[in-house]
Length: 375
Image (cartoon, rainbow, N blue to C red):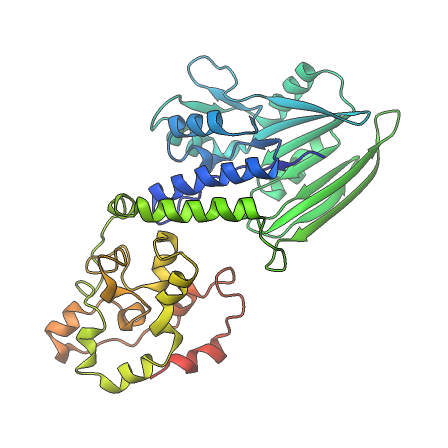
């Protein structure tokens, strides 16, 4: 068996805190090592903190990093190992990693932040050059960090390849036959694990391919070693919490600044009484129960005003701004408190879906949920 990953281990450009993402990325790679991963290809987001940080993580990882078309700008040499081979039984498998050419500008800009600047070479020519250098193998796998549509176009051009594994889409796993090879997509965010069984005939042709995927839902028990590693990550978040939140910009919201629900109660007692009966009023308790009360990625949906002036910072700093409060739905209230006669706009239902996303709240139904919090 060969366990592979399609890249983008270091979060995404829309994350709340870069320092939190760095820590998350470090622990993700440690977890992959515990799982026994063989190799990971590079994605564009793996360069988002500069090349120095990436190089440090590559040096610490217990598995290999591969990419045939990521090159150093200074000397045009490969940045990572271009291919890997592994013998499984009587079959020698070669894996070639590639990164989507359309990410060239983003990767070049990000890698130039710190460390060694890199560039992205054309995928097809990089695969051809690498296959020649790799020599004879029984099975060729291209691990392609690119959208499935681009991987399909790539697969149609390849002649001496048996499998293309695509990783980039925010969609579930898929599998299909393309000419004489198999194209599979593994899903995203570790929600599935794909399983591909292959048989190669004596002439080197792919004679059998069985593709399946497993939904990594709550029915799976936590691995003790991985669970312990995750708790260590959460403890690191608490230990380094003040440094992490200092890295988060405090923006000025529409409405002046956040003031907290205590400022609202005197004028809106009936609404406050109803709010206290809802799950919104105890939203932060769910973080405490699961040891996520120092996890910045959870704060936007379990506190009020995180990342804005007057909003939540940390539970030991701003406890009065915990939970989903009035301003979570109605917006910052400082201007309204100063001049109540100006009135206050009702919340838009789009506020709900900022947090009740399919990933965060898969059972959410607006018609069912909204009446429970209206007042």
